Length: 433
Image (cartoon, rainbow, N blue to C red; front, side, top):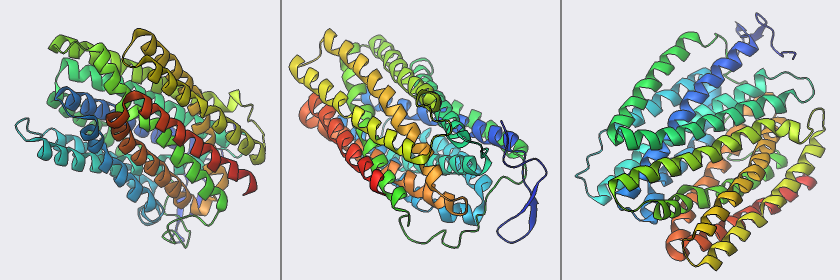
């Protein structure tokens, strides 16, 4: 596979100075390793917080509140992503994301079990907000670097971004299981301290071994030039992305984990530990499978050498295929009237199918945003796109708690279906962009 930036090649940075471009494969490997480490901790932290506070008796709405500032922080961070990368460079924003995640973990370890619910929710929301900034700094840095490092041969960009995104989600899935396992075996505080120590070690290694000259400090004159892209395709794709991730998080964040815990746990300490493993295992399997499908998406779609118009047509098709799945699952949950073995089996199968179709959608989106964006403003377009992604997760997180508390699992899944339908309608507009 040809590489676009041979080792030792010189280019000019934002100030006109000559710098040496890194070996693209080595730089890609370093960025990917850092991103993997971050997402492992991110998945584990989410599962730790969700299961720990659910076991303490928090309601679905209170659980949703724990993650709201995480998503709000992501919106703000991504909106400023172009300016941050232009001002400090991609390596600096990657280091910053890792360092902030370490700080969030250390802060979370200070949580006092004796605090009241209001104080606990407020504190965890604030810590999760820091973690949200960290996540989107790391994500923006990694995805933008791929645009600049990927080979220019046909299909090269799609394959490289699919490999990064797919492997990232597989690692995050392992993080879900790791978080559940650590909670069951070591307890909340020990798990958080352990993750902080491992991530600090990885940050030091990345700083020491990341090749000099990682692309950054873009020359775009409008790195802070408005809240949305001037490219209609980027704006429409971002809208579709917002509803797509809202459709997932409506059931993923609160609804399904709480339902499974009600089914799997008998209320005893041993029963809760067993439920932690089973829930974490299922969500890990879902994320890992989702990541594997993302990585295979270029091959599954036969995308090598395809024009953007054909990939756009497939994005619209797969967005439509997602819509009926959550509606059918909502109908099954309504018909069951409550927890039942056949319903649990149906949900597992249906959500795995949802994950397959969702992964194809997500992978195509991740390719199109880089294909649509120009190299001199890629951090701004990627930042805006992931701002929409974070907005969808925020909406989905809030609706997950609200819909489950108001109407139980049927309303939760029906709301996911409505969000999927909105994503399909937004994707259809790409054909006229």
